[in-house]
Amino acid sequence: MAAAASSSSTESPKTTTERRGIPGAQFVEDVETYLSQTALDVNSTLAFLQERLQQYKLVEMKLLAQQRGLQAKIPDIEKCLDVVVTLQAEKGTGEAFIADFEVSEGIYSRARIEDNDSVCLWLGANVMLEYSCEEATSLLKKNSENAKASLEVLIADLQFLRDQVTITQVTIARVYNWDVHQRRIRQTATSSATKDS
Image (tube, rainbow, N blue to C red; front, side, top):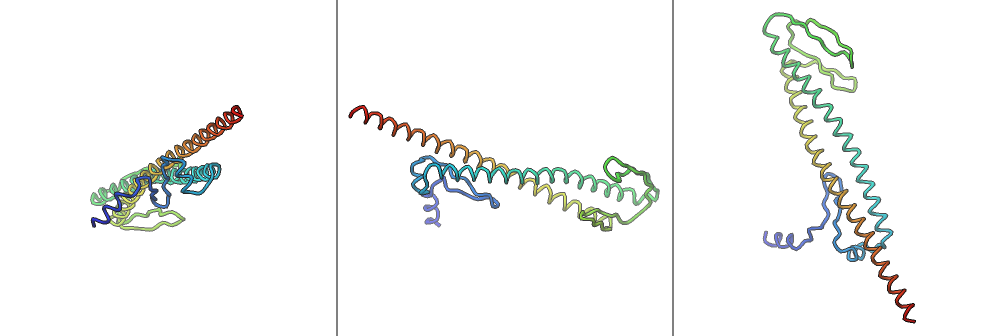
């Protein structure tokens, strides 16, 4: 245990990590050391970093689309759950009640609902199943919890991804600025050598 603790303390805090398939970006403090470790020239390094940045942007677009889908799905699930709970509450009264329901977007219909022990839930992919009210309630609660948990994980993934984008952009700027600085030094050395001769 002590050996594991000492080896982790000697590791560099700049090591890259991964989160759910998203590679971590490495923060570069010393550009010259970084270039020698990667065995790439400045242009190749900048091309690699730009490519990695584009990959991050693509993953971000996919995650944002998933987030929008979940944010739209959660209210629908909760609305269905409210309807099932209302049906269960009205079940014991012995009276029929009138309800307006959405047939499709912007189209509503009125229905007279008698005592019933089951509901039909649209599962998607042209599948609708009949459940008892208790089964439907537990299924919808489980789906709501799963969707909320997925949304939390997705938000954490997006935050991690944004951090990686920022680190990569800073690294690109550092490598570029280091290259400009090295060119100026070489140019100054060349011009001073020509003046001396």
